[in-house]
Amino acid sequence: MIRYVSAASLLIVVAFLSGCSRGGDTGPPPRATDSIEVPAQESVIAVPITVDLSGLATALEKEVPRTLYTIDRPDETCVASKKVKVAFVKLKTPTIKCDLTGAVTRGKLRFEGRGKDILVTFPVHATVQAKDIGGILSQETASADATASARMRIDLDRNWNPVGTVDLNYSWTDEPHIDFIGQRIEFTKDADKELRKVIARLERTLPAELGKLKLREQVDKLWGKAFTSLQLNRANPPVWMRVTPQALQYGGYTLTGTRLSLDIGMEALTQTFVGDRPADPKRTPLPRMAPLSQNAGRMVFFIPVIADYKQLEPVVAKALRKRQARPFDIPGIGPVMARFGDVEIYGTTGGRIAAGVTFSAVPRDTDYSGATGKIWLTGRPVNQPGSRKVDFTEVDVRGDTDSRGADLLLKLAGTPGFSQTVGTALAQNFEKDYSELLGKVSRAISEKREGDLIIRAEIDKARTGKLKAAGQGLYLPVWGEGQASITLPAP
Image (cartoon, rainbow, N blue to C red; front, side):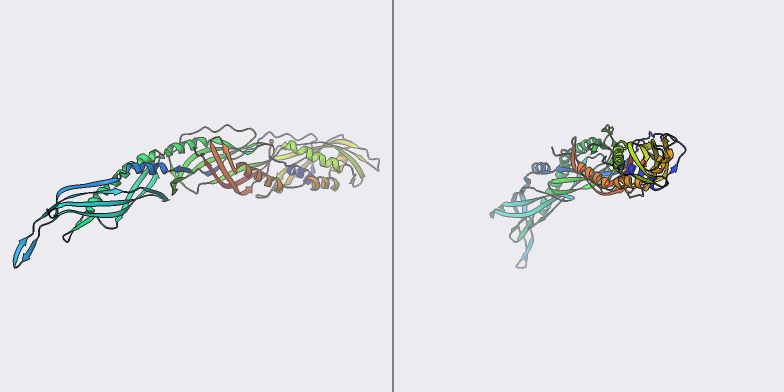
């Protein structure tokens, strides 16, 4: 993915520093053909859906009539007959009739989202007139005001269809009534009866209007678009993360003003691929809604830090050629001049790395004959969990040389000067490459558009696994965790 010179270089360093054993074979170690297997990870990605409810407010404004109800009750009993005592004589007063007319009207609906509730508030004004009151008075008028609030809640059924409930509350500042000849005639029961009809009407209207929001269609569209692959690294080599949704979970909603935000989490498998863009996974039908089991938005990234063996070869060769300007001191022989040629590195069997170095060696001050050949080193790369520092175990050395000079080459390969040169030039761990990788991935997915989707992600934690040498390359598994969301852009 980036420059990885450390792992294979350390193989050579440790091989020479640790006193390699000499194997009986002289030919190159067998090549491994296994590929890097990247395990799939499970994530719960946030897929928030935001809906503008201003259309719902407009629909309810049209649905709830301005005149909630009218009063037209002719020949009503305005004052009932009663018995009175006058000079020890009981008399019965006449029943006074009148015509009652009036209306209860509402003002403009005020629409507001507050937490889990949609609050629709509106002023209510009642005017009642008593006309032709017993032939005595022509008219009496009374009025009253109230503030009504409809508290509506939305839920989703298992098929992602919205359903709603309505709870209407109101309080009269002065209950509708008229005062006549010391009598109070109230119309509160009439108002209550009619306002209950308003509640029933809202309850019938709300599901139909919520259906017009097309929430299920939006959820289904996002579900289908999420079967895709995201590019984590553009080149050297390209790395892709394929997202395969498994389930959708619903955790409720929040309301702000006229904006409804659904809290939805998408369970998904994330698989990492190195090389060409993988084919998008096959889409499955929108699953039934399940309750949210954990906070949505937590995503696990698997990122293989890969060292391409071919890219390591020229780096190792360059370091050795620089060192050949000075002699190597071999005990019992003295100064020896060496000239280094090609370096070959690849994965061998058993999770090991093979490094072959071609060079010639000529003693400077003795009659010891020179030698030319190729030394092969193998070793298993190891690291501690959570560490990028690389060591090698099970180190072995074999020679592919002429029989006369094999011992000279092996002795030169074991000198401190040889190993220190390679070690000083190339011995390092994955720390720098690891940090560069996380930076590149973070920039790649901080916010990007993939088809019709907008992906936002931020890695806030990472850990490393164990190194593995395969035929495809040497890689260090890295798991990154962070916040991630997938949204559809606003139309």
